[in-house]
Image 1 (cartoon, rainbow, N blue to C red):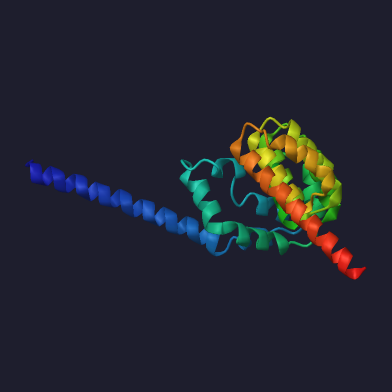
Image 2 (cartoon, rainbow, N blue to C red; image 1 turned 180 degrees about the horizontal axis):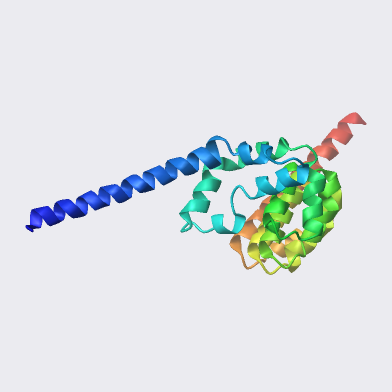
Length: 228
């Protein structure tokens, strides 16, 4: 066999492999992206629907960019569409709280906490505060973010403790961002400690948050003075 024939054969097998890969990607798109609600609607009760929804992609695996399959599922669905699918499930919040309380093995706990951040109300605040001390760092990261999104005043001091005590900088950053949305003067001493944080992202975000609190307080004082 001449060299040209060998090269032609290798090229043909390469093209076949490429075609198989393209078919796989298109099939994944159809199943997971075009109509991911198919699996959700096939469940009879709210718990079944929530479990299917949470497992549309793997939280842990999708963090690994080398895991192309799971990362593509998450990227293609997008946070917005994923949240909308969750909102379409009646009674999702109580189910999510129960899954967290029982540490249900069918779902990933960081995914549950992220879902509570997206769908939860003030009813979820106590569980999210508890999650700030969870052994799984991704649960703590998502809990800090979720509490900022809900914006309940009960979360202020637990977030301050996470900011000054948690060893993971990602948790501390999310705690600062959350405090930026709901902090009062009571948070400032904790934020001032964070100015010396070993993570530059934490310290710079803390500085911005302190300025935001001070500006907000100044506006409130001016408004109160005008009313008088």
